[in-house]
Structure formats: structure tokens, C-alpha cells
Length: 125
Image 1 (cartoon, rainbow, N blue to C red):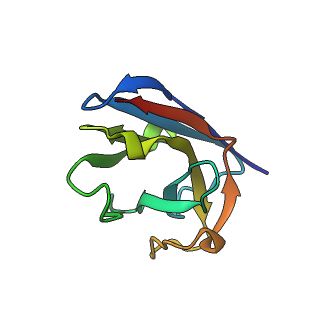
Image 2 (tube, helix red, strand yellow; image 1 turned 135 degrees about the horizontal axis):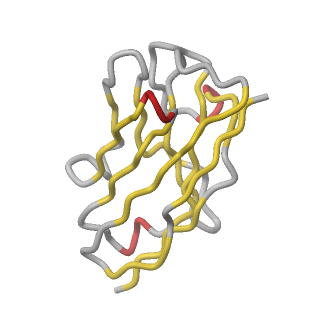
């Protein structure tokens, strides 16, 4: 079993920053990609970005490109989501997930296997 635990969410004013963490444990296989998704009330879960453990290559949704950065610490089995210049529309529950692929950072939640419990990010105006 794989466990993914997110942390770092909270309340921040528009224009502020937060850093989310996702710690993987259990039978976690760091060969697979790890993605970040978010879901606002009444909306579908959407892709935010993801990272390939092997070489650190990343992929981002257009809505966050240039504002969000994903990085990893292999020794700690931890992936980070640095969020800058936050907007009210970034308000959502944020989830990390392990993908089925080691190469492709997919944007479809169905490409992901294990999920964390989520952490809430609220951006006020």
C-alpha cells in the first residue's frame, strides 16, 4: 500500500504564496510520476502539474504556469508545490497522486493510482 500525505494548505491573501508538501510512504515506488490536482466545490478535479521522479521534468496546467513550481526531494520521498501570486480562483482542495506511468505526466485523474487526502487552500481577495 502507498500512502501520500499532503500538508501546507491554509488561508492566504491574493498575491501571497504557499508551499504544499506531499510525502510518500509505504510501498511507494519513486519511479512513477507524481501529480498535483485541485478540486473546488461543484467543479471537477483538475490537473495542476506533475513531476517525473527520474529526471525532475515537470508539466503544468496553463492556468498556473509561471506562478507554480513543482520540485522533489528524492531522499525524503517528498514533492513540493510552490504557489506564488495566488489568485482567488486558486481556492480549492489540493491533492497529490501517484501516476501509473514512470514517464508521462498525464493530466487526466484516471492516469493516477494512489491519492492523498488533500489539503485546503483558500485565497481571499
